[in-house]
Length: 251
Ligand code: PGA
Image (cartoon, rainbow, N blue to C red; front, side):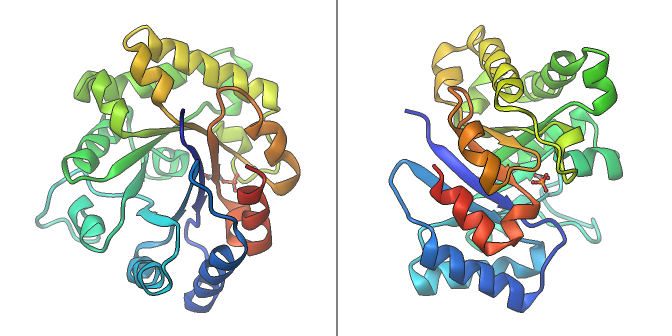
């Protein structure tokens, strides 16, 4: 059985009070269960706030970083290493989020290096892939998504996906209020799984593939009900406690 994962990407949003409030409400209102994992991705200054909260309150969720350096350590002003995230108790890291790719010029190769660094430091990478509106209109969705995945396989091998999570996030749906229909998302998820299955059926079957892009309480059940959609990576709605909790409880 694949694990269902509901993950909140808080981006550069929130402050001490707001993040404390979201943590408290998730702990109080989200119903834990053995077959679903809840993850939050705070901005880096709030790592210890999340780590301490989870430790003190016996919370059932885990946290990760939104980005890491591809380097192990050294003179890289402003960067955060995978081992620093691990040091504070982080378990996961997003790599290749479309905002990192488009705003900070992260290439498929750089994303693959970050993926590798995450695993070398004991973090589970959540590899984000997805096409732009223009690429979808030009029928390039699968070409783009497969190239993003293949860059990681080229560097790390197919086995690396036995210790990773994938997130399909169509760029045109992120933060826009436009959501892929359950059928549109399922089609891409299924094709991704087929592509990986051609290299390892076991790894493809066990890999959790999340959908991201304007997931909200009113569209979550439809998306999460699809055979190859194993959870959600949620941006905007994850910073609104009621909405994040409602999505988590829709599983
Ligand atoms: P959104 O963001 O839910 O606000 O569209 C998703 C993401 O960026 O991971």
